[in-house]
Amino acid sequence: MSRGAWARPQGKQREQLLAEQRRQDELNNEVEAIKATLGKAATELSQSISGNEAARTALDDKRRRLDAARQRYLAARRRLDDQFTALDSLEAKVAELEAIRRAEEARLRAVIKESEDLKKEQFRRGQK
Image (tube, rainbow, N blue to C red):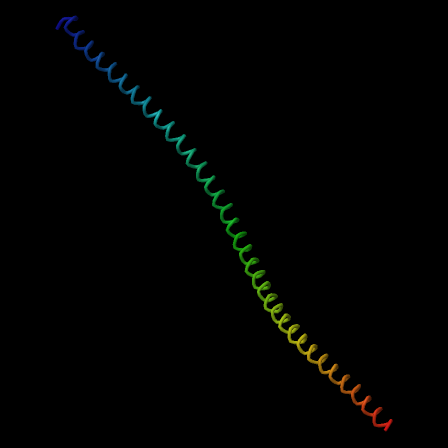
């Protein structure tokens, strides 16, 4: 085999080798780009998870405060209902006592009138 004949297959192999190296470099570049993208996505996911955990903690805290506020509201509502019931009872008692007072005043006026009538009658009898 001559030197030129032997160089041709080597040249072809060299070209194939260079082409394979270029493809490998391109694939390596793609792999690195994918790694970088995945790394960035992992970082964003981690930050998102941290943000979600913070938001979840804040939401849980707000839920606890809301539950406590609801309990305070219910307790206040019960006290208010009790006070309205007591007020209704007091108003009924006042109305009852007012009716008794009016009746007693009417009886007192009747007794006073009867007493005055008796005095007048005794005075008339004493003059006869």
